[in-house]
Image (cartoon, rainbow, N blue to C red; front, top):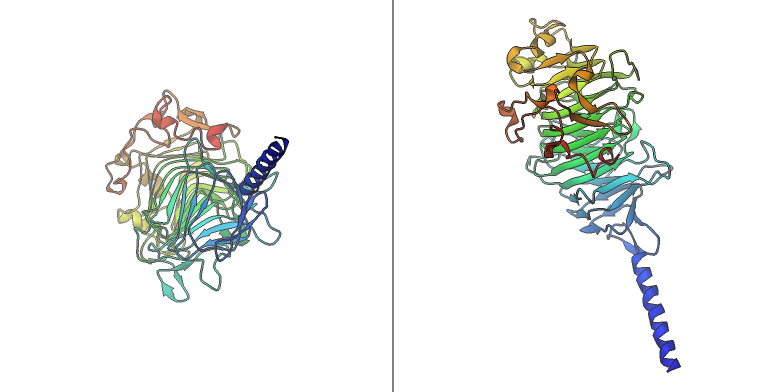
Length: 471
């Protein structure tokens, strides 16, 4: 009997020990998908060349630049945490190359978290997420038009940083209920990684319910492509929130932006910065994306607040870009809207051509609501005051409001717990219009800005999963 009990106890100990080893297994990414080890966390490095699933019961670490290659699909379970390593010579960066997919499909209750590995995290600790697709772009690389080399030191001798193609319906996967924190890295001046870089990404890709917190350069930069975005939140970005160029043609609806008055970039910070390309050329496809229902909270709670002097405008549309903004609000910037025709093909030609619109939008609390920078070749009918006259065209439904307080938002400038819900009497509770053909495919709502009236389902989409909504 005693011998039997001894054998039973030994078996239980052995089973428990084996179970513990299994739970602690780490898969270190390599060309063959990895080898087993017994470290506490899973380390991703090198290449992931076969389908791979990251499990929610592990914490993963991105070491250096990690490329998903060879048509592989990287699936990430809801509730998983992935840390970017702050290396001495490189920053952890995840790159989804052309023909590959990331399926990061979180839930409201179990969002997927990409964050820093540092005990006291700060912006720039890691390089962020780069997704490269086969959609159209006006970029060129090594003399080949229609493809580009993405910024941030990602491209290598194998061409793993190349993007673009001919398929606007390309599918690079899903980012849903995803938070990206403390990402972005200045590889070289004007050659940076962002919170999320989307280059040549097609419109079959899903980007919905994504928050980017304290990005070290832009929150999102789209280099060409046709990817659409919904339900985005950008908090305390360093440079630009939506940076678009090289022929991006997607649509964005329901976006919250809250800037920090003390934080801006030396290159001048804006919430919208858009170029057709760096030279303002007429190359096709032209940057012509569409925004609707965006709430932009700039750095100045009142017009007497200055904050960081490196803030420029809420939206700068320049270098022959033809983006359009509808049903939105821009508040608290030195300049609300800047139509900049000073370089390349004059941007205001797109207004004359009926391809660039700003309609049913409010500019509030900005020292200069609308401004215009001309070039020697700008249309002769446009003068510095012409942009404001155009913005105030009666049929456009735009308005200028002197004070941010007149918008009656719940707590727009409370940085510890911001809330951009319009309260009773807010002009944002009505006035939206979806009759413009550019808004086809978006969700018609009656309100302007990113969230609906208090108490409605449209008021709470940002709560419960985002860092902003967890305060």
